[in-house]
Image (cartoon, rainbow, N blue to C red; front, side, top):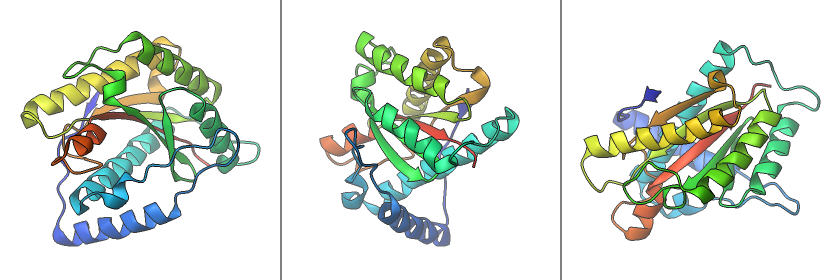
Length: 223
């Protein structure tokens, strides 16, 4: 399992990241239909650091997924192209209870699982209902075998950085193990722990900390 440490940025890099945040938020759109995905709007009201932190994890996840796509020799999406290929996955995953799907790029989905749903407080042990949702998600991933999978674990800023880092790694690893246990090829999926370094919202409020305690699953294909 790969471990991710804090991601530092210079002033110029931070400005560039914020520009990308604005463009990213402006360009993301929901997929229509009876299972319309629930878009995440929290970043619009979050602090600058939180928005940049969430974006950094997305950028890093894409890079990790690209390594999987290259190393596992996964071919390009076929048929109607990568957009249609990802549309089909998004619609099916949106039907799974306890998930929300964010389209962060034409070829990339970010599936959100709140840590409070998947795990008890300060625990990396999945409960039965969590496993049921992950079992369904594994079924979709197995159906779309040209997709790379990056599990990303995050925490809020409560507790020490060392503790949060380890907890995020264990939680991401637990999700990866369930996917593999359901037949997902190990070469297609990696697990990363980010600790408290990539918040989606401010850690100054209970609601913000709840958003930051999360496990996301990035799905990415090659066109």
